[in-house]
Length: 270
Image (cartoon, rainbow, N blue to C red; front, side, top):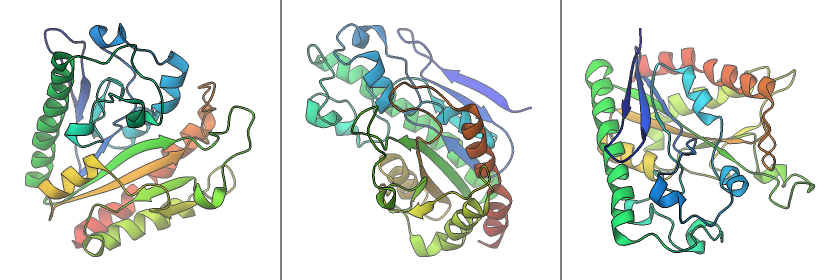
């Protein structure tokens, strides 16, 4: 049975959950968390609905396609694990798409505690990935995110589909040539999947190329780690109300799962 762990400190609820099992695949959903520790929650200005819209709800469910995963439980508005450390706490509106996050800015001690979470997360993730490297030689990470595509408002038309694929695969932080067989097979198999009688629009580096997490993995594991930064258009939910379409989410789950045999084949050739 996969092992489950959690991280907590004396003054915080659990920060993430860890699940360990078999295979060279690993997944995370860095922005799925919604918890805010009490001292930060008390000074929030952003409302619950807006905060949820800028998080990535349900992406944690999709990490279940593999056995090895780490799932942050706290919101990106407490600390953003996908930004460089010196940008990981949103202090000004320009850090958060023009949103006013705070009634008053967190003080230095609060920021330090948030950055401690950042450091702990990366330290634990490093240990987990080192274990996969030692056991399998190579590993592939699903770095799962979602993005809004109706930013004009709840009654607005969808944003231009030419610039907003159903799935954007970010590969801009790696040696593309080294990992081309894995990347190309992943995209190929996703496009082949029968998604509710149709096929997903899957393209590479259209909106997102990957950021801090992928950069960090590729710098620490340049010869063994391949991070696929997967941005899912929120076709599985209403980004304004938060309402989920379970069948569409399930379809994306099985689409991702369908890529695992091909990735395993390509890893064996590495």
